[in-house]
Amino acid sequence: MTAPVSSQTTTPAAPLAESLLALVAQHGTGRSALLPVLIGLHAERHQITDEAMQLVAEQLGIAPVEVQGVVTFYHFLSNEPAGRHEIHVCRTISCALGGMSAVVRRMENETGVKMGETTPDGSVSIDWANCIGLCDQPPAILADRHAYGKVTPDEIAELIASFRN
Ligand code: FES
Image 1 (spheres, protein in one colour):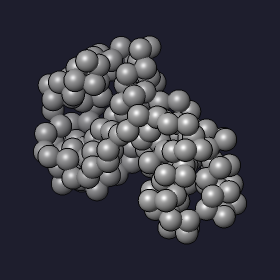
Image 2 (tube, rainbow, N blue to C red):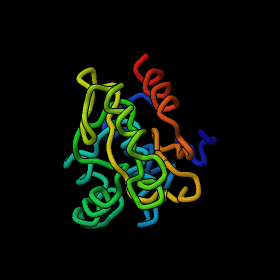
Image 3 (cartoon, rainbow, N blue to C red):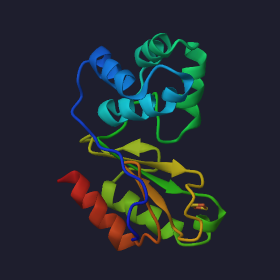
């Protein structure tokens, strides 16, 4: 598995308004702040609720439907509760032909859940992603927003074990 090509820290969840104000202070209130604010909220809370979308819209001075559009567009943002750790597997052509199926089978065996589901203990969610830009390194995944290429079934098993400890 190649080294992550992006990073995002996770911090303990604070009250929603407090988290949001901290993110707005960090990223500003312009439209360009929308995505980093949503990524920060999701990293802390593992879900962007309707209430959160409304508050983000108010803070950034944009329509709630714009916030909802961004949340529903990106696979790493979700209106539904996700696990404390999230793994997304690229299902686009290069990865589909480059070993994706074996990785997915191992993920489902190791977690005991199907793609799109969360383990009963809330530790791990597994789901699909579209191309994440590592087409030359299939199969590729996003794990807690870190991108990895050339992932093997054994490596995905190790990653899941580390997330469940
Ligand atoms: S096709 Fe999988 S990362 Fe692009």
